[in-house]
Length: 237
Image (cartoon, one colour):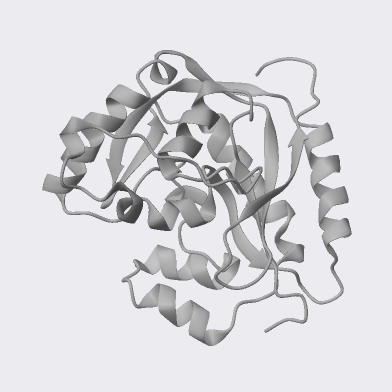
């Protein structure tokens, strides 16, 4: 374990003033910006379902979409170095929009995803993986094996070895996670409720206008927002 036990992730998080952020945090039961525990919504459709248990895994990470997965800092790198690099990166990026979001299944999870795949967000994620990789401490063999135990394709294995995570580059799927893993019959129950909750937010394009650094101070601790960095380019793509 490195001397600095914190992990950092480069994420997209909606504006803290937005309806999407407020509803996402309320659904998960925690605001990763303030650390505040929030009352979760209830629904007749979910009678008999334990929403707190269903959202336990994503609640720990906070409401977000991963762009560069969490990592420990490499030897010789500091949190201040990372902050400066992210700020410089964002200074040259332009905001853009994706198509409206939709509540969908991704594997065994319920997520929010753009209805139409976004080349701009895929490029942003790939750039984050590449540009900031020198900040990443190489994972231990046990960490890599834990990924392999879930079953990887040949390409995912290659990505794991190169970038420390198998679901990057062409394997990347932009999403904001809303539940833990469930069989299809249970996912469908949650999807119906979540479509109602996020209906207004799914009627408009989603604006991607910055990066947010999330920090996990120590193992098993919940992630918190460390800093938001706006894209400072002049015009929409």
